[in-house]
Image (tube, rainbow, N blue to C red; front, side, top):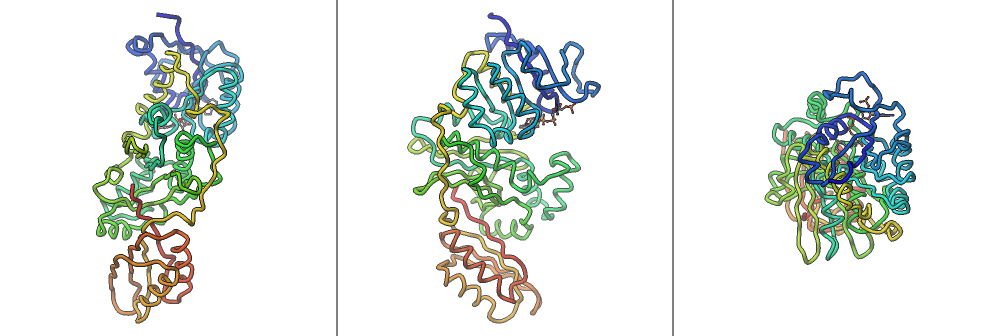
Length: 427
Ligand SMILES: NC(=O)c1ccc[n+]([C@@H]2O[C@H](COP(=O)([O-])OP(=O)(O)OC[C@H]3O[C@@H](n4cnc5c(N)ncnc54)[C@H](OP(=O)(O)O)[C@@H]3O)[C@@H](O)[C@H]2O)c1
C-alpha cells in the first residue's frame, strides 16, 4: 500500500465528527488502496464533548492555517458562503491542496471561480455532500448521465420541508404547528428561514443545474417560493385531485433558455417523487434517450453525509480527480435564463371568497379573459354569506396568463385572501 493520504479537517460537528470516525476503518483503507491520516483539525471549542478521542488529533484554533499544513487534502465542514470557509477553501486550492466540502452555500456563490482555481493548480474540488446528503447525485450527473446529457432535473432537496409537508398531510395540522414540532425534534433550525423559505433548495438546485447543463452556478435567475403559504386545506384538496404537494427544485432546458425554480408543486400520486416521505430527499433526472433516473435516500444527518465526504476522499486517494462541475472550468457558460412567465403547466388555484351570487362568474370571467380554461372545480360551502373555498384545476397554460388573471381577481371585493396558485408538475 502506498503512503497515507494526509488530511486536514476543519469542522468537527455533525459531519466532521462522522468523518473522523469513518476514516478509522481499516476496510476503507483497503478499498481505497491507501491509508488515511488526519494531520490537523480545527473547530471552535476544544473542550466540547464530541464523543471522539480528540487527544490524538493535532488542533489549531485558526482553521485557515490548515492551508499551511502538510496535508494533501483539506476537508471543509464548517459552512457559510464566505468568511472562514471561503478563505480556507480558496487558500487550500491556491496552495495546491485538494479540497472536499459539503458547503452548498459557498459553492452556489463561488463555485465556478473555485473550480477554476482548482483546475489551474491541478487539484480536485469535490462536493458530493453538498447536495442531497448521502445520495450520489453529484457523481451521477458529473460522471454517469453524460452520453446524452440531461434535459431536466426535479429534486426534493430539503428534508425539513419534506418532513413538514408529510406531517401536515398525515395529521391535518398547520404549517406553524408542525414547524414548531420539527424544531423541538431537531429536524428544523431555530432560524428556519433558509429551509422553509426555499433558499437551501435553491443553493442545491443551482449546483445540480451546473452539473446538468455546464453553466456557471447562478443564483440570480431562479424564482424561489417556500412552503409557508401551504395550508392543510391545500393538502386535502390535492389529495382529492390525486396529487401530493412537494417542495420541488426544478431545472430544465427549454427552447428559450434554462428554467430554474423552487416552489411547492402538485405531484401526481403514483409517481416516484410523490412517495418521498419524511426527511428523505430525491432527484429525478431526465437523460434524453437514456430515459429517466430516480435517486432517493437520506438527504442529511451524520452517516449519510459522512458517506458522501468519504466517497470524495476515496476518489482522491485513487487519483480520480475530475472536473469539479463535470466540465472544464473554462467551458462553464453563463446561464441563459428562460422567461419564467413563459413556463407552462396546469395549475391548482384556490380562492377564498364570500359565498354570494356572482362570485364564481366573476372569477371565471377573469380567467377566460386571460385565456385560462378550467378542467375541474370543487366548491365547499359553509353558511350563506361566510367565506368559502373554490378550488380549480386549469388546463395547461402559461404562468404569465394565470398571474394576469389572479391580479384581476384579487381586486374583487368578494375575494377574501390572496389566491393560492400551485403548478401541477408532470415529473
Ligand atoms: N448536517 C448535515 O446533515 C449536512 C448535510 C449536507 C451538508 N452539510 C454541510 O456540511 C457542513 C457542516 O455541517 P454540520 O452539520 O456538520 O455543521 P455543524 O454541526 O454546525 O458543525 C460545524 C463545525 O464547524 C466548526 N466551526 C464553526 N466555525 C468555525 C471556525 N471559525 N473555525 C473552525 N471551526 C469552526 C464548529 O466548531 P464547534 O464544534 O467547536 O462549534 C463545528 O465543529 C455545512 O456546510 C453543511 O451545510 C451538512
